[in-house]
Image (cartoon, rainbow, N blue to C red):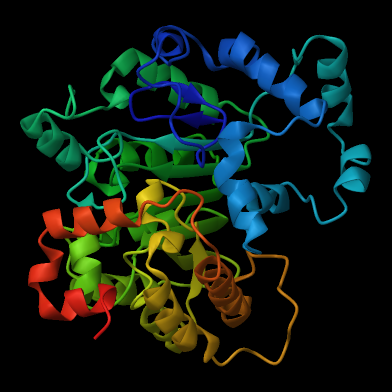
Length: 405
């Protein structure tokens, strides 16, 4: 289960936040409803019935698109965490939880005597960056800018954890989950909030350290004391968001400096331990980053650093396919010259960091497919209008990425 920055519940951390700012948000949130009540809410029961009847979920479009490009989506990665492989039906019928699924099928989507064992929690939208592909619900800095421009009504800061009662109830529920398996923390920038360490402390105090604990950070903050606490958990996954190399990354991830971020990644790598602490690059390949993304991948290979991507689906005008044909042809020549590993098979376990080269090879193949695709809607003009509005064409080096030289 997922909790958004504003406290609304959601089924999946990968899906766009479609509940916030709707009538549903007045009911499906940590302030008015317990986690148990959310589990058997109308929203979740209907979602469960659709899944059990094999009905594709429109909100899962991001994962479906990634899989169509041959990439490993969050859906597949979550399945791997649950020991579900490529033979889904066999794994389903042999699952120890099949009785819960069948109970739901016979009871209009309700479930009985089952708690979530995997949590994806946003600790607020506080963020020191304003990334071009992000929005106000995930970045307080973007929200503040949008309020000034009159394109967003606010509030600039969204942080449900400031409500002490909601925070206590949620943390107590998680820490009292007998079979807790996974907690992943996001923001905004989660390391900006003191609630991050507070939750870590509570998990340690409750002896919930035999779990997968992950967090996604923007690589601008490093806390040495935090690393010592993280060492107590069975498995740690530190995901660091970077887009590409050079000044292009700084323009995409406004407020960051790529050299500083790489230095902080090097600090995290000092604490990497096979089977215990993993460090992973998180990238979102887009029409903006694709020009120097291959350089970042080469750097990652030199550090034996695994990569996990979610190819950009929104905003749609930033999709790779929106680039002009001539630019895509130029990029194709570069990516098709990539030196692939001898193995042609993609390592299905995208969570095996020792297969970093194979994973990166697969990302390159996904990018090549995206470059060969025509855009679903022709939004190239909108893309270039935005680039001009941002002043990117005033920088010769950046302009050359988007025009024929």
